[in-house]
Amino acid sequence: TESKYHRHGGNLKTRSTELGSAVTGSSLTTILPASTTVKKSIVFSSESRKELAKQAKVTKEERRAQIDGRHRYLISRLADGIDLSEQQVEETIISDDKFQLIEQFFAPSGLKKLLFFYQDVLQQKLNASSRSDGSTNSLPQKKLFITMGSTEDFTGTCAFFLRTSDEVITASNVSQEVNFGMFDCTNGNILQGLEFFLSQIMIPALKSQQNWGAVKEGLKNSQIQEFLYSVDKFVGTLSSSRQNIEAKIQLTKVDIDSYVRNLQNPSDYITAG
View 1 (cartoon, rainbow, N blue to C red):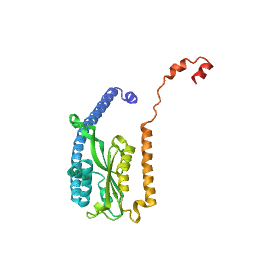
View 2: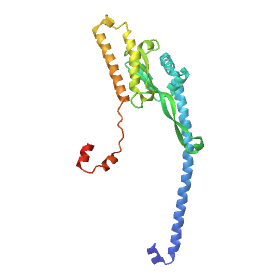
View 3: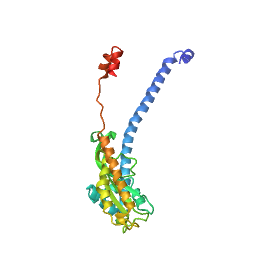
């Protein structure tokens, strides 16, 4: 600008004014579309949510059409064990992102286990007072969901289905080929839940078992007795571990400064030691 002032004399003021107008004008053109863009993004976000909801509804109905006797067996077991209605369980299953795991479980040589967690999870709730900005509140709510068992913290009840063979699961054989069980780990007490499940359910069931397959002697067989003894011993180890954790030693907090201040000579240090 200085060089142009020297060359053209009084043009400095004019060019400065033009420059200021250009800057002001550019600022306005930047601010106004930004505000408009925010509003548009909110509208687009709302439209996107509607589209996602529409797609989710279509997916749910497609999955509902796939439900047969195999799914009904799982749903009835879950409803009985978790104290939910079969309709609630069905809606939960067909809405789950991991619905395909059920089909993988039914397939020949498929998944060996199918896990469900029923516990408090944080649900995103739209803030009614701030709907325009899409803000949400996280509230804990009981939820049943399919899981691999390795990605979510386990703090509630686990319902599980186990396959007994590699055969394809059909509506006619599902009750023979699939075992159902549950154990409660409320508040994250996994050791206590597993201990209760083994000691109160599995071990009594094993000890009352009459048919041991190729082992004709049944409970009189030394290998069967050794197996049951090892299971009993394992449960005892679980119990000891749980009790040791619950009865952990809490060291008393000591105000060490008051002791240090009174140490004046070597004999005080010896006494303190």
